[in-house]
Length: 211
Image (tube, rainbow, N blue to C red; front, side, top):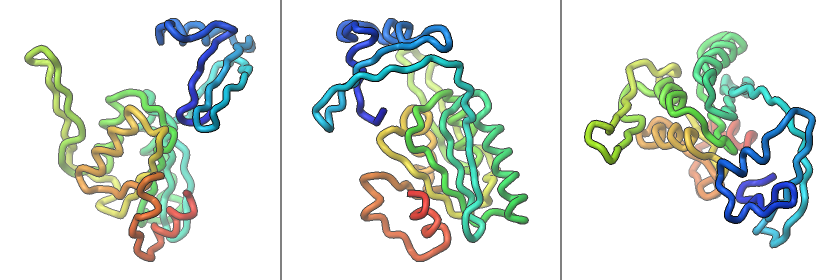
């Protein structure tokens, strides 16, 4: 499955006219049972069948590894209840492996479908000392909310690059937007990678190795 693929049939039934709730319910089922989908891939102007086996999936929200010159690579795959605590645990492990503070971080949010707003706020706050993270406006007076960062950047201002693509959505967009708007990180994605001015440095070499 790729970004921008469309599910057009579920078990031989067209999804056109079907609500999102009904479509999701139809795809769910008992573990080890199967569901047949037909996928439309507009980029290739073709459709094709896919048979999936249902399963209980336990998602590890964060993965990491230590790269050259003390650069930490962190990949957030989703924003669930444990994302922020998992992120901090991985950062601590990376510093132990590096035998000292990291010299920079690559935060990979590619193909991250999002998740909990509270976790997006917490993750953003980890890397910020101040500034607005996100604000919401409701139709009813009193529903507006504004979330700002508290002092305490875990990297203490060390360089940071965020990798994004067309699959970065929801909470991932909030984190990327907050770090970009507060000038805390450089964004790299399909539209900006080719023209990004990356000075020769260890973090730039590490980025190129990741992308």
